[in-house]
Image 1 (tube, helix red, strand yellow):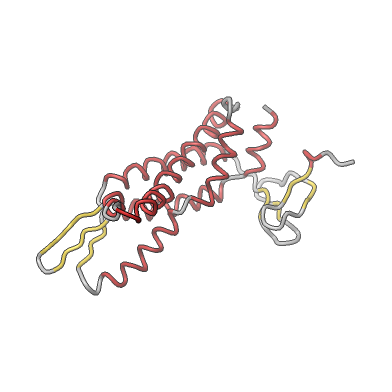
Image 2: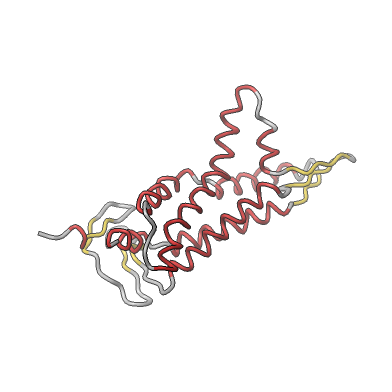
Length: 203
């Protein structure tokens, strides 16, 4: 009989493998679909804490700062992400506005705060806070609904058409959002779910 603690499941193809500790600089990869399963790094918790805190700060900034400045025929307007969403907040489109704001701003912010609650105590004290396992499970459940990357790609496609009709200047929030997407990619790349769950289980 094999202890289930010694097994690791591939998140892509669900194949079960015996969990081995890779050496520094090595990776544990699924033999079936080649998904990276474990990549040990020194100071991983500290890096994730810093990246999650950066994501939270950038998200708060994008809420209040102008996203775009549009001018056409002498008329101009500055618009933030919230302003753009609230412009369609009447009638049958209200649920769509709520879903957009939640998936683009609230869920990514909530996920960043949950990660901070889980990882920051591990980074600084070596022990997680009470309820950290539940918080981390919530952050993983929210990941498919965090669509900041989809939003910025949609904006890029839309702006290609808008620029032929008006003069468009990217605001501070646009660049913050672009940086946020890049940082999120690095954060998910540094995040070793196996290591976090092992730490939470041991505590």
